[in-house]
Image 1 (cartoon, rainbow, N blue to C red):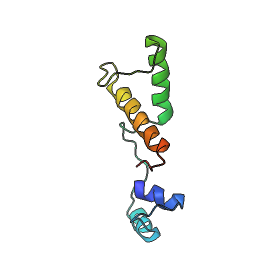
Image 2: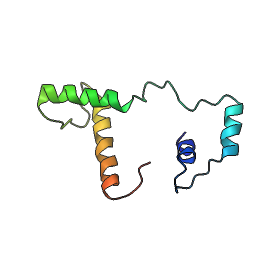
Image 3: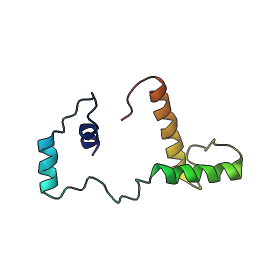
Image 4: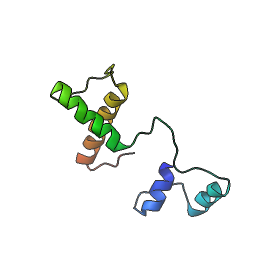
Length: 92
């Protein structure tokens, strides 16, 4: 899925995914998007962070936050992605 995304973005990043490979995957019914519950839209986690801030007054979600460990992981990922962005490096 990541490689397909790179392929369709037509950026300068190289990928082993080719149009032919994508076509072959489609021909056997490959799903480019999944209904995997671990893949929650960015906006959903952002709304959870807003609720967290309303309750706790900050956005410092602790690592392993027991009430919502997924939010904790998401916040950590956002910080990592922003750091890469600031450094001009590609994320994922």
